Image 1 (cartoon, helix red, strand yellow):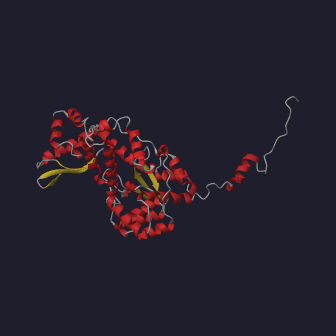
Image 2 (cartoon, helix red, strand yellow):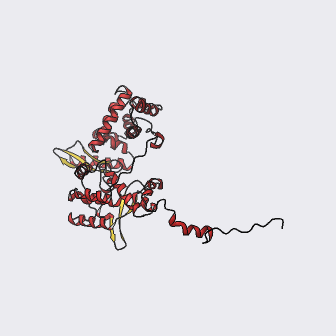
Image 3 (cartoon, helix red, strand yellow):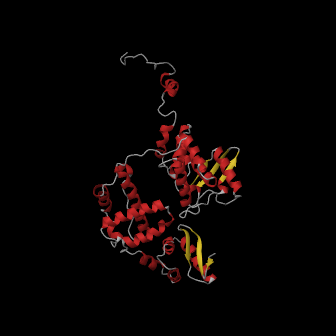
Length: 394
């Protein structure tokens, strides 16, 4: 149901495959507003999410969209929106609206990437189809590494941002497909250390954390789930832990996580007792039940509190994302098998989890297997039994 704001109705709801849209429906008539909102939902159901995204991003007016829908000219409108001459400046302006929900630090990073793209192209009015040709990847890498003299790790991160931009352009139909840059391994990016907190640092971190938001960070540190899995974001408002996702019982405490890491788009995460007690207290304190979200802060607010806490606790170069490393290292040190750690973190490949193997207390300790291996090879004796040699001519 659209809501009335002033003299105009607005839609403010989640659309499947598009996300939340908060835009004017350009009408003061309730029935017309309902009709236009139903039209947007029907478009999503029929696979026309690209047109709904264009409305969300301000590229097409709702009146023009309704006219194309009612006259069965949606295909024609789609072709009009797929401008082959879309320039870098206009394309990035549309992309920038999508970045508005990111933290200010991330937006600054994308702004630097935009400046480098403009410097590389030499002008802002170059068509993106012309800019992102088959030679772009090699030439842009050479520009960043040799002409700008950037470190390989920096180049890898900035190329990932450019890849996200080209994916956006491909979704809009301005280029044929997104560009793929070399992996960190192919670029020769040195592996960074795993950033995590020890028990003393965790206690110090949580002591400086405000009581209201402490339960969220205990859940992240204790289970290893992502921030985007624990609470809804602008891109994925349907995600986030709800009261109904928690299953507390005598056989163990579990939580259902909605995500896109595994093929089933959901996974079961074990909730350690000390985390379970914190979540139960959080639910009672805020009087939550059923489909209520456990955590409803904005991502930027959580990141701001995290940075303040790290500064007060004297912890440097530690991101919220590193809570996953803290959880994984703690589980590995406790002797939890790697396949269970993989399940807990939602890793698609065991190779991703293998980086935590070295923290296991039995890592590289062959001596504890001596008796078992000796039993298999030598039958329990100190040396294998060697049968006497017999001649085949006997």
